[in-house]
Length: 189
Image 1 (cartoon, one colour):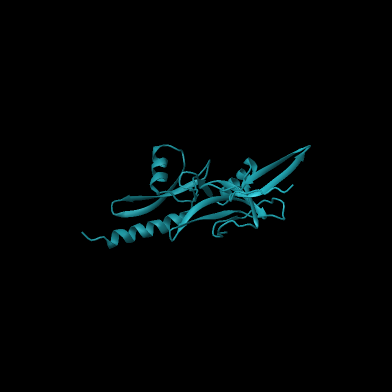
Image 2 (image 1 turned 45 degrees about the vertical axis):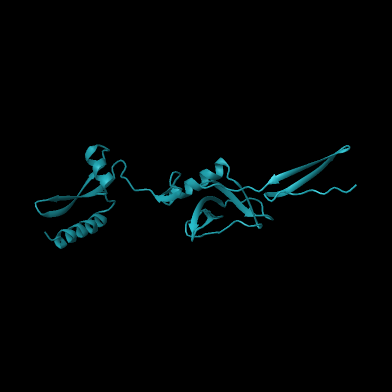
C-alpha cells in the first residue's frame, strides 16, 4: 500500500515508526530562534561543541536577519563575526542552562555583559573594590586637578561613578582632565 505525506514547510525531520498494524509519523518542526534567545549551533555531522551563541535580530536595509555571536571552541568571545542566516548545514537548538552560563561567563571575563532588555552586548564599567583606588577630577577656582580615594560606596563615590568622573588609573584621569581643560579653554561666552 502506498502512502503520500505532505510535509509542512516548517519541518526538518519526519520519523515513521510501525507498531503492529499501525504506522505513526511524527513531524519535528524547525527550531526558529526568537530575538534574544541563547542557542547552540553546530554542523549536522558534528556533535555539539562549545560554540554557544545568542541571537540578535538585526535590521539590514529593511530585511530582518539574525546575527549570531558567541564563544568558540577556545572560549574566546567573538562580537564582530556575523554568521548570517542559519542554513541547512547547521543544527540549532536552545542552549542549555550550562551553555548559557558559559557564554555569560565568557562575556564577563571580557568586561562585557548581555543586556536582555536591549538585546545587545554592553561593556561592564570598572568599579574599585577593597583597597583599590579610583581617580576623579576636582574642578575648583579655575583649575582641574586629579585626586584619588578608595570607593566607600557612599554618596560621593556613587555620584562620581554615576556621572563618569571615575577612572581606573591616574593616567586615564590625567587624559580626562586634559580634555576638560581644553573644553574650558575653547568655551566662549
